[in-house]
Structure formats: structure tokens, C-alpha cells
Length: 163
Image 1 (spheres, rainbow, N blue to C red):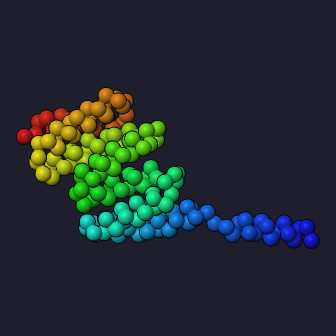
Image 2 (cartoon, rainbow, N blue to C red):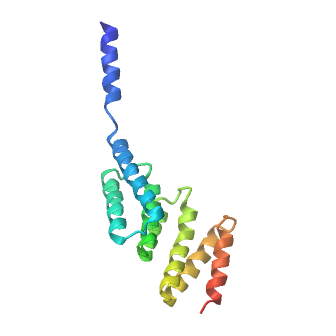
Image 3 (cartoon, one colour):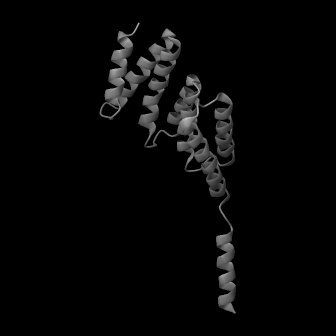
């Protein structure tokens, strides 16, 4: 009889799924579908906002989930996809503040310059050019040996030569 109760206990233990993992799995499926769709179809603001809202809902429910840093980077990517460069910049800024020890913090720092660079190329508003150069310069200063440092130097050179 003792073995029978042990088996029931183990079965019950495994049947109790982790709610944050279930929610993440559901989010991952929606995300996969979203990104597959937009490999061949242009992203609209409405579609992007819908996915971003799902990310935000997940973040509110599970503020300490281990996948949050990646979710931040995906949110920024979506904002860039429909040319909301300043929203992407804010997400990268939040990422570097909230996850300062994360392995992708250097990437997020580089991307702050990149989204300002994109904003400048899209709008030709000189302030974005100044911001891009500033962010790229800070990135190079902090991560001079990072593989993206060469790209940052090239971008600064290009921006300084553009009118």
C-alpha cells in the first residue's frame, strides 16, 4: 500500500505544471507564429502592438522570469520593425538598467546607437544623428574589444561624413 501512495504523490507532483512555464510556452508559440508571419509580410503597427502587449502582460504576471531579458530585446526588435525607433531606444535603455550584468548588455548598448542611426536615416532629423554618434561612442569606450565596436566606429565615420 505504501508504494501505491508514493506513486500517486509523484503523479500529482508532475501533474502540477509550473504556471510561469505554461504561460511562457504559450507566449513562445504566439511569438513563433508572429515572427514566421513577418518574415514575408510587412509588420504593421497594430500587429506589433498586439505582440508587445502580450509581452507586457507576461512581464506583469512574471516579473522575475528568467526569459525577461530576451523578451525585452524582442520588444525592441518589434518596435524597430514598424519604425518606432524611440520606443525601441527606451526598451534598450530599460534593458541596460534592469539587467546590467546580462550577457547581452553590450549588444543592447550598441543597439541604442543603431536605433538612433535608423531614426536619423528615416527622418534626417539631426538630433538623432547626434544621439547615434554619442551612443556609439559610449559603446566603444565601454566595450572597445567587442565584435560590434568595429561596426560602431564605421557608423560614426559614416554619420560624420553625412550631411
